[in-house]
Structure formats: structure tokens, C-alpha cells
Length: 364
Image (tube, rainbow, N blue to C red; front, side):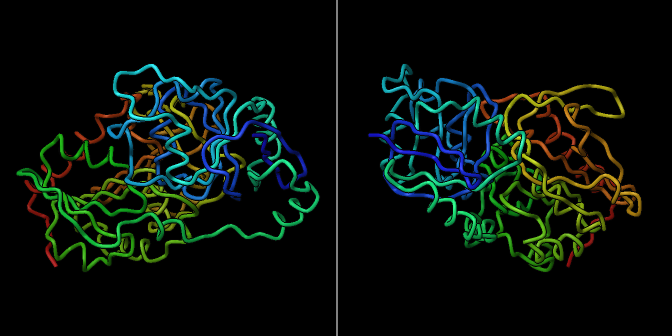
């Protein structure tokens, strides 16, 4: 069945429908990864977005439960050049089409994704609608321009209540702003005793658990839409070691007096080079973010830039000059990879151990 993707600038693409026939609106973004589409469609950071894959063939290894990063997907649509109907993988449990039908997600195949990506790169992210082929483009554009996209994505994807993931090692409080399960897996590998808290946990909620360290997860949307998290970070800063990823990195920067801003089209993919300034080492990283820390705003803070993106020079890592706290914009927990920055979890463990040795842990 023919359906279409209509952008708010009036551009439209006709393609073959797969998955749900629901009409959905979202911010249209592109991902440059060659593999890992299951991680992408199940990453809560894509909440409310229509994701375009630049790699031409998607669905060739099907769908399996093991490779998801969340219980439920939160994307509003998926756009591909070619969708594979016959997966070739021994772990395959269903096709992408079957999964999207089950989860009520519309997909569109046969689209010139190269052209679509060039439009987004030139004009920036745009609102879009996946709908039936007979929908009027003019009416759809008017509707899109009048539509305000939701700003409560973190609330929608965060856990509603605290839960444990027991271990015998360091006690880590993981604040869930839209957590990828990869973060939890990496902490579990290091035998951490993890307690996951909702996005709106207070500093008192965190500190009464007597954590050895606090992890700030990734998540969707504008960090300025989560002021309660900024307050929480300010309340624990210096009292417990802290490690933040993606949205956690941006929230940390805001809590320390820096500013964030929306990017033209963001960084999304598993092939972004990032340079560690102290060593000169370049890591290939997985990324998914539409906002960035404003580099100029760091001048009046006690934050130091540790990593930069080689593609555009944006801030990719920070550390606090006075307290045991560091963050990165990219995803060191990425699955299926790359794993170039996986050692950051070991650095977090070492920071916790050093803090314990110095006897500076302050309990609430």
C-alpha cells in the first residue's frame, strides 16, 4: 500500500507502507548507523521522532528480544530505502513489519533517504507526518505548522517507580531520564548494586540511599524541560561521584552554570569520531542527541572540556575541576557498538574507589 511522508516545508515522499497504518507526527531525524536498527528504534531518546535510516537495507536480521534497549519503543515512525521481508539470522523472532504492526508504529520503505537526509542537513530537523497517500499536502503542511510537539518526553519514558538491580559491588543510583538498558548492563558487568530512580527524584531521594556513585542516564528532548533534574544534580554535586551520559551530560552542564542549545540536525549514528583532548586519542562513538552544550558558556563555570567532536567541534565531554564528576555526550554503552569508550565505566569505578579512600562520602 502506498503512503507518504510530508514535511512541514511542503516536501513529500511516496513509499510503500509497512507496520501500522496509523497517522503519526514527529520531528524527522536521520541516523547514519550501518547496523543496530533494533537499538535505534528502542532507544527512548528517540521518543516522538520519525527516524530515517541512511543505510539502504534495513530489517535483514529481523527482530529479537535480546537486542532491545527498552521494554517498549517510543519512536513515531521509521523511514527506509529498502525493508527486508525475509531476515537471515538464527535469532530472528519476527520481521520488522510484524513488530511495527504489533507496536502500532508506521513505517515507510522505498523512499529516497539520501534526498531526505540532504534536506534535513540543509534546513535542519523538520516536523513531518506519515499518512495515507490521498492526504492533501497543503492541508498537512498547515496542520504541521500549527502542531506543537510535546515537551514531556522524559516523563513519558522514565520509570514510574524505583527498582533495584542487585549486585555485590559499589552501590550506584542510576537516574532514569530515558535510560538505555546498555547502561544498566555495563554497571551489572562490574557487579554494581544498582538502584534505578525516576527522572524527578530529589537530591534527598538519592542521598538517603547512601550511594557510592550516581549515574545520570541518556534521554530525549530539551534538557531545559527537566528543571527538577537540574535541582537534584546541584544538591548532590560534590557529595558523591557522578557520571553522566548524553542528556545526563547536558543536565550536568546546566546544573553547573553552563548553557545548552538546539543543534541544526543533531548527531545520530554509530560512527562519530570524538577526540580526547588530554591524550589526543580518537574514539569512534555512538551518538543520539539534538542538543549540545554551548562551549562559550563554560567560561564562567568550573567545568573543563575533555572531549570534542571532530566533525563539528562541539563539546563531547566535561569534568568538574573541584568535584569527582565527569560526563560525555556520546554513548560508551553502545550496543552493538562501537566499544571504543567502554573504559569510561571503569574510570567511574576507579573514581568511586578513590573517593572512598579519601573518606569524603557525605551521607544525608
